[in-house]
Length: 411
Image 1 (cartoon, helix red, strand yellow):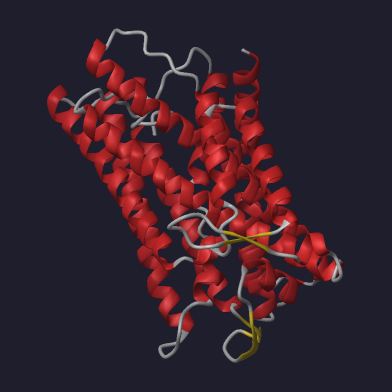
Image 2 (cartoon, one colour):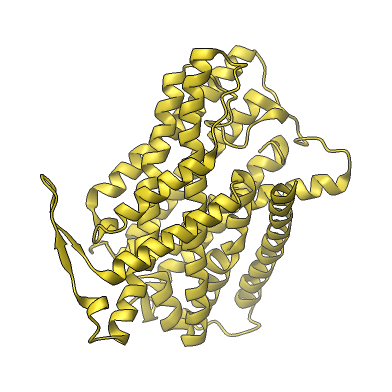
């Protein structure tokens, strides 16, 4: 918001929200195939839909894009969790020793701690399917979003003015401003990853009413609620701090008090990210492990399970493949996060890297195929022009975000 200013900031968020809603509208027609109304096939995931509707080659490309998405989310979650843990310690330090104290804590230590927790949690079978996990994630998200927005509003009241400007953060040259705008687009793109999980959610619904009708209402609610919170957090934060707005409201120490509330909000973030990391990662774990199980049907390393019992704990079923693969994966994600521990820059790259294929390209192409829309008809031209325009914006965001990440790494 601070990079774009009071006009472009909210409008850009609304534009990305609109693109996400369009994507959801197109994907509703891709749950059943080849007929979007009567099937007979149902597509339980985004990747299944691409493979069945657009063919194996597009399916392979989509598979790579999906894997990249899981990896980038793991990296961002590791960085964010470490920053939030550090913020809790700094908040208590500032409260006890004063706001001018040199409360310096290295994020690498907390990334390692978060990685160790993920290695342990990743061994829990079907962790992502635990019903309470979604409820906890939703509660944590609402809690820290409300706290961040509330603290921003309180700061505005304390200041007695609304800070910020129409043009956003000023720069010495037009080129610097262009780079800041491109980075902001990447950051906002990261906030709208809804499309990849739309069909998985739709597959859990029961009819009547039809899954398509239910998802129409759900997608409208989801996009509106998340966009509202983004606008509140971004708007109140920018109004409170203006051009000095921190990249992360709850960890950038625009707020020092009440320290216990900031601690609680950051604890909610960490708890949310511990579960969220596994929701994404275990999808990848399951896919790889099922493929290896089919490829090596007689392998004891792949198939043999060993029960492990701790006092007052349910028995764990471990196997060599799961221990080695999942541990290696978490170690690699943690190592990348430690090499690039730059929150806003990494979020920008992560947001731009596969937003277009997941949110725009594949939904548009699947919709055209499902509805048998012929090339060069007005509807096909409009849809593909929309796709190309979104591609141009995302390429611009990606280039700017990569430049910012490289600059941060070597400065």
